[in-house]
Image (cartoon, rainbow, N blue to C red):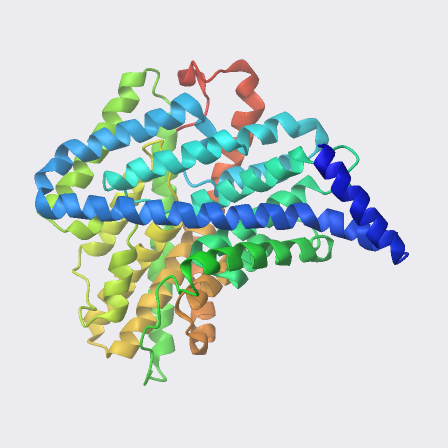
Length: 462
């Protein structure tokens, strides 16, 4: 604390020398965003490395002893769920709905409620639980968890500020953290900004644009400094596209928009069914069955059902093996449904993208398309499926665009996102995250009558 006060006095002397008190205040307000963004970038890189190692170990075990997964997957699912339920119940699932709920609750009277959704314990549990899930072949991603992790970091930095520090909006701090987390996870700075504007913010952009841009830039540069200027996927071939392929884009977007929304609806239905569980053994049985089903699908049908699905996307986009078997979209939907409803931590962004890629790949096989045209349908499927879940067409299009650096496809990808967003309403008028946000808000408001030691009393599903 003395060190912080000493820094403040030195900066006051410097800025007073230039006769600009306003500049000093702006600097002090920006400093917490810079520090939190730097930490977010470092943690995101560390998490990304661990996640890749866990996927690699899982793949190695399957290659050498596939039968082990009949024991490993249920065990990992149970352990991942137990860690969440025992130490941080709000660390379960993606993390994005928790951040949305925290933003909505960000008023002084709700500080305790926000702290339950965003804190350092959640950060630790989120990483551990999702890594255990991936080790066991769980179909989850790290992108949604990174958003909650970043929100927790920004929230904690805000809480550490002394009382004399210039006031900073808690809501803006969390929103900037979420955007920085997504940008660092995917290396997609524009995607992080659009995500904050389209999904998170309910206020005018001018109130927090500088903080948002700064957070995204610093977190992204930190990640790039450690990992290099990488692309999440790479540079797929999209040359010699047919001028009639926009019709294929629309068809794939219609299918993936419906499927993404339907998958969300099924997950919510399972949550509602599970809310009737009154005993721990019921949850354990359900989680074990989920693990055994996933292990069976991998063992008897196709190993590609396991993991986040990034390998499936890279194979489809960058090799001659572009066509998926007819059952792959079903596997890539069943896997996330079983994994996400286990009650453990894990995101749905990457699994949604891989599911959409498998639909686009299957459509390309039906039409016997060239490599470039096939890749267009694969990318359109990724945008469409993610949009069907999140209802954020521009975020989905920009994310896929930045993952592949194929800027000549901007109009086709935005067409896919808009089409999927419109058709997804047929299944459900609201996004998957909106439903979960309401559940978390209800749970936080009712948690005064519940405790972590008696999780069976919680009114919402795990």
